Amino acid sequence: MSTTTSPVAADVVDVQDCWNVIGVNGDQRCDKLAQAVHCRNCGVYASAAQKNLQRPVGADYKREWAAHFRQAAGNTRQLDASCLVFRVGREWLSLPTRMFVSVAPTAKPHRLPHRGSRGLSGIVNVGGTLYPCMSLAELLGIDDSEGEAATDRHTFARLLLTQWEDQAYALPVADLHGILRHASNQMQTPAATINKGLSRFLAGVITHGDMRIGALDETLIGHQLARSLR
Image: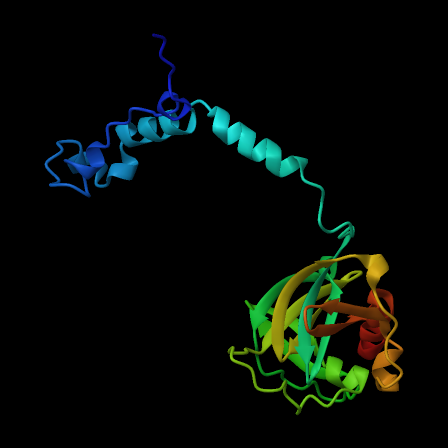
């Protein structure tokens, strides 16, 4: 009578988990604790982790993942573009991710004397660096006193720090959705009902779930921001 070895049993790695017996998760009588303080700083713990990661891959595991990758892709769209989605007033908008440097907490701008350019709210201090604070609401003709309809999630205003050519800007937004990957050839034409101040800056509209996001034209917005500083 022949016997076969279970593929699961062949993959089992014999690891002595002393940290659960005499270590920090046990009775803490290990003499190495005095120097290591915690088991994660001990060479025995690190060696056990390496041994576990280097265990052989089981046949069942290989078959499962091979079957997974043999399946036809359910979504044939090529997600070739990335943008950061944010809200100004009631409008969800986006700009290409490459324009952004970081996100910062909101800050009150300090007005500049004798500078009344449209869209320039003043300057803000972010981490010791001064940025011109630009109002997208004013530049795009959006009423930023209007908020989004009530939802079940909390919303937090943010400052988006962006870079256009050699100039950095701070853009206040009412809410931040995050980074979204999308197919550039799937963008839709903006609706005729969108206000003219906003529509002329849109490259298209992205649909994401129940959201319709206005994709702002990077070049037009960049030139408009630079123009406001002159």
